[in-house]
Image (cartoon, rainbow over all chains, first blue to last red):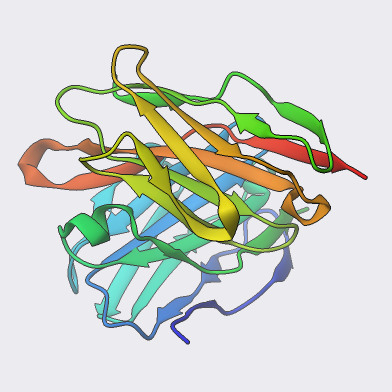
Length: 116
Length: 116
C-alpha cells in the first residue's frame, strides 16, 4: 500500500523554537507539497517541490522554509515558531505533470502543531 | 484568480436521502476538477476527478460529480447517504503557474453530517 508518512501526529513547541516537520513518500513521486489546514480557510499551499533540491513558494511561505535533499523526503522548517503557526500541517505527493499526477495527490495523515 | 468556492460550510442530510455538496470554479482554460474527502484525524483521500469527456464522473464509495460548464459548477452527489459518509469534503482545481508548473488549489471545505 502506497504511503505518505509524516513523522509526528501531534507536536507541542514553544515560541521561538526551530521546528522540523518531516514527510516521506514511498511511491517515487516527483512532486511533493506542504499545506496547512485551518478551519474556514481550507488548505493553503506553503511550499512545493517538483524535483530534488528544487523548491517553489506557495501561497503562504512567510515564516517557513523547506528542504528536499532526497526524492522521497520533503521537510518543512519553521525557523522561529510563533503562535499563529499553530495549525494542522499536511504533506502530499504526486507524479510529475501527468493527468493522473495533476489530481492524484496522496496525503499524509497530518501533523497537528501547537505553538505555546 | 483561479479558484474554487464551496458555498456551504455544512450540509445535513438524513440517512438514505440523496446528498449534494456544491462547488463552483473560476479558471482560465479547461478546468481539471477534483473532490477529496477527509475523515476525522486523517489526511485527505482522493474521491474523483473531471478532466474531459462525460460530464458525470463516478468515483469512490458510490460518489459521483456532475460537471456543468455553463454554470461553472462541479457538485458532488450520492443517491443514498450513509452515516459513514459524514466527513469534510474538499473541492479542488488544477491551476497553471508561470514557468509551466501546476498546482492544485482547494476550496474551504464542506462538512457533511448524515443523520441516522
